[in-house]
Length: 320
Ligand SMILES: NC(=O)c1ccc[n+]([C@@H]2O[C@H](COP(=O)([O-])OP(=O)(O)OC[C@H]3O[C@@H](n4cnc5c(N)ncnc54)[C@H](OP(=O)(O)O)[C@@H]3O)[C@@H](O)[C@H]2O)c1
Image (cartoon, rainbow, N blue to C red):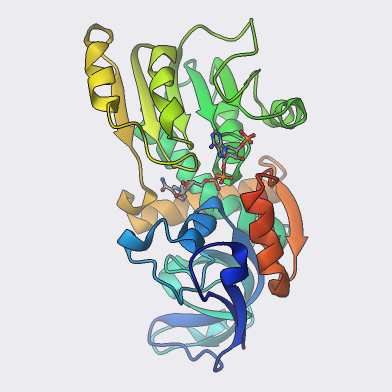
């Protein structure tokens, strides 16, 4: 089988297609012939070595979200899974490959009306967005701002907040064209990366989902309503400023909350239940799969070049 490894941390040239032995499932696992794998912003961070402290070392094969067909089952897995079309979250990478082994608990049936390409743009990032909104204690009627809305998580967060009855769904993005696309997904106000550019946008938000972090994060504390909650979901813009805590304390009388959110803290069964619902909703056309482009496995470097260039709206997908 073929896979794409991070041979050396750094630019996309460090990604290499390698030949590996055919996958053999361990107990409780299935082998999936991968037809589609999502390429995420997190993959680029891992490739650059930015997540080495979290155990992502050179030699890692990226790709957590896959869809395809089960070709073999390990001990303890019902044989009826063989031949079924599935979506799966590996949780440990390995998806940039023609085959991947996944524990059966992380596998879901692929709705027949949903293509593998569409499925890998919805199931993983949609659940992150869902539980991040829940972590932010979002309730219908509240105003939401999604900072960094043009990525895989953001396009799902916008749709979910709009569907759940947010009074406003503002987004930050870097171009008017992206803003128009986000409006079609449910955004009501389009702001530039600094949070400006729409005179009609709400003065404050009850919830900010922040996928960017970086030096610009502190300024968004002033966009929170009293009792507002800012939840950090990602850090594509780099680490937050060191004085974020003191900036928060300086706004003491507004009862603001800052929290981080990681899907790793959500019970696996809860994640799977939401993923299943969202894949079904996408199959019914109630959620939009936002596919930026579809490339072959050998084009993984090109995919990462596009990520690095900031070209990607929604998800890039590789089709091994
Ligand atoms: N919390 C969790 O459980 C969880 C799970 C998976 C991933 N993650 C994290 O989520 C992030 C990846 O999410 P993603 O794939 O949705 O993001 P992404 O596509 O990499 O980026 C989202 C958007 O942020 C904007 N952006 C990029 N760099 C920026 C900068 N320097 N300043 C301001 N805006 C910038 C870009 O939009 P514009 O150009 O339009 O502004 C980009 O489209 C990673 O940090 C990853 O670790 C978290």
